[in-house]
Length: 181
Image (cartoon, rainbow, N blue to C red):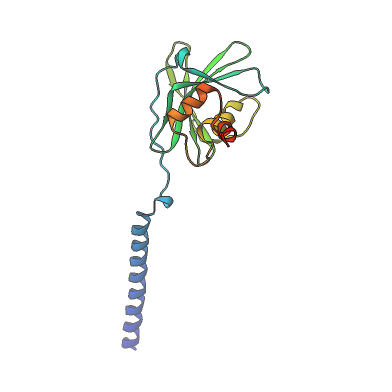
């Protein structure tokens, strides 16, 4: 009887040790698998307040009378793949809303980082969550920026210089590719 118990105990230890080694090996392997690593957002650096000379008009369509602009001097693509930019919305009623935002091409999401004040300063957004980009009547510029300028290839952000050139020309990258063909 004691010999059978000893064999059983050795077998159980061998199985558990093998499982632990397999788990450790599996964890070690995931270190090399870049596609499986969790995405980590970098801390957004608030840009300088937008200057009128750097604003490029974004066609929001005829669904709204508001005018949408992007501060071309603020456009960056971070190491985390997020396109960050300053948006300026001039409403039909005369108000001006300035926001610093981010856009993730790979997930079709946008996030609000900060709000501009009329004195040229910034205040961080109280709630800053990633939200799905959808075509909406009140904020059509997010959809246009996503589809035409920042993410025409959905998983790859457009390099800033290319996006800035397209914004200054007023022709989206998706549109210019269609006319090139």
